[in-house]
Amino acid sequence: MDEMSLSNTCDNVEPIWEFEGDIDPSTEIPHGRQILIISKDQSFLTHGIHKFPAKFFPELPRYLIRRYSNENDVVLDPMCGSGTVVLETLLNNRHAIGIDIDPIAKLVTKVKTTPIDEEVLRSLSELLTTRVLQRYRTKYSPNIPEFSYRDNWFRPFVLKELGIIRDTIHEISYPVSKELYDFHRTIFSSIIRDVSNADPHCTRTVIRKKQIRNISPGDTLMHFKQALVNQIDAMVEFTNLFIEKEMKQCEIPDTDAIETGIDENTINLIVTSPPYINAVDYPRTHQLEMYWLGLVQDGPLSKMKRKYIGTETVYKDEYEKLRQLGYSSLDPILSRIYAIDSRRAFITYKFFKEMKTQLKEMYRILQPGGYYCLAIGNNVIRGIRIRSHDILTEIATSEDVGFILERMFFSGLIRHFIKIPRRERMSGEWVLILKKLE
Image 1 (cartoon, helix red, strand yellow):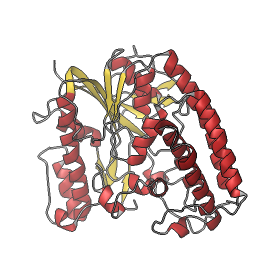
Image 2: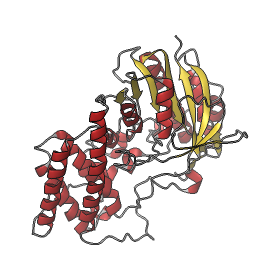
Image 3: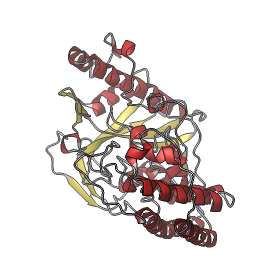
Image 4: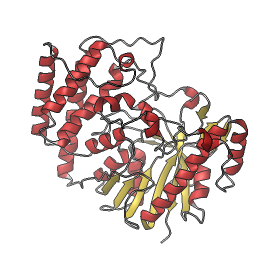
């Protein structure tokens, strides 16, 4: 991302509204206001089951869900990432639908919102860890998946230990239930980056030549055991609450944000945070986990990347000429970028073109009077500032789409699970509150 950095500076000079923890849903955040949420719930229940870049703080979607929907309403996150909105929807007694094209996102979202019987979970997990240690102490030879540069990413003893865990999960958990199997696979996935040779704090999966990872034989097994212990307790707490509150089961359809397959006028509220233009390369970020879980489709990762909104994977013939969308907030910027870098201009054009299609789909499936709450960060591309919130507002409120903008505000960020270089760091997001006319 050397040539495409990010900037989310809020131009508002009024005092920042600071919230420690939850925001009262009766609070009306004025148009243009800057807020700062000091999150207390990033690992509440199953929220912390798996690292994921650019995660929502639970408090923001919780506020939006409580303010713009009612109990028993249907709430959708069409780009659900790690499932923060989906889990918060269930916890607030709504029907939840989560959609994402990323296989890790779908797995994590499903697992963190699916209850598991405590007795089965604890007994099978104990058997799993016992069997893993038994195999580690013998000459057991695990099945280790083949993938590009595998032996660069992992040391030989780490490959063996990961292979033992992977084999044992399939043997112990798979025959019992898909819920248990997916839970154990998610815990397994959550440690893979930490025991690899890759930098665990970077959104890109890279090996730092000057960074020597301190990993010893047996560490992988201990990482897995500790993560399992922690997340069993979190899952038990969630399951008990799920039963107590009689929560609804969430839906995770095998569709995408542009073609949801959802009937028109059926969704009460949509809350999401789209990917930024070229900000996080999700297939590359999750490639090691996907290889170990068998989630990589046939062919190179670039083939998978092309399906993601905001992808930088484009073909040369696509950016040989300037492309524009007819919006005053966007077209002059595309021209300026094109004069410097035609490829970056097309990537920017493609993002907003796909977001227009996505906005039209959201308008179609929302009930009249329903809200679409969209959190988006701004970009700087080739030194040119991209005010994504202004561009998306113009697109969303155009005759082609039909939303009205009720308000927007700026939500600051104070920390991330995965560190991002300073010049690429997101200081916050603009939250657009879009409404479908009655």
